[in-house]
Image (tube, rainbow, N blue to C red; front, side, top):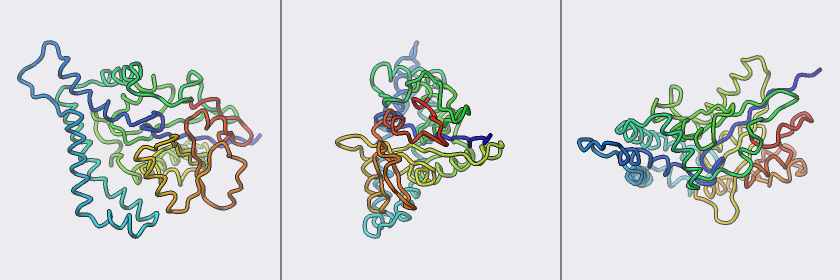
Length: 307
């Protein structure tokens, strides 16, 4: 009997598994810990607030855009390569922002368990909302002919513990991201699209090295940070909200449109004749992804929800 190829389901986190970015909520943790300390320590300076960290990041971006020629080239001499070069050139800014976050968390000695519990509370209080279909089957996961899918969250977020807290547990999901408690992911860190692509290729190589053959890769994301992975995957799915799009969704739609990359609603999967053209699919949530049938490989239904 033919052994089915392994499946790699690789998911972005912020604004993909959640409805909006969770970074502001995450960055509020050090300030909350500082003010809730019992007894308070008046000798300790308060950590940088979420607003202060965001302002420092925006200031770096504004300085970059004012002085870097790639910013103007992105708008006047557009190509897919130019768009990705522009995005990837922001790596130093993204890294500096992460390192400022590390200092804020270090200042009040936030623990892994504290971060995980903060993620759970944020969902319980409604401050963070998980998209429909993400946790619909109690953690059974996808299967391909009896083989459990390898599910990875590949994110430029700053804490695996935060992601696990928001998602309600580990549930067999492997998270790859930077960690404000332990440092950068891998040897180089994870900040921009090129970093994500390097990590995705590493996941594929590890699966092949394990004797499972070349895996079938499905990647789901929402921003230009995900673009190289979306194009690399066998099936790339863009999460796109109805009505007014967020800034990152808007930017990705603009880049795909100007690059001539077709994007079809995932409900039309299997019906659209794409030929040799490289296309992506879009969905509002994971219920649409599952219902579309795009998670069917070699005639086997891979699952009823994301995990």
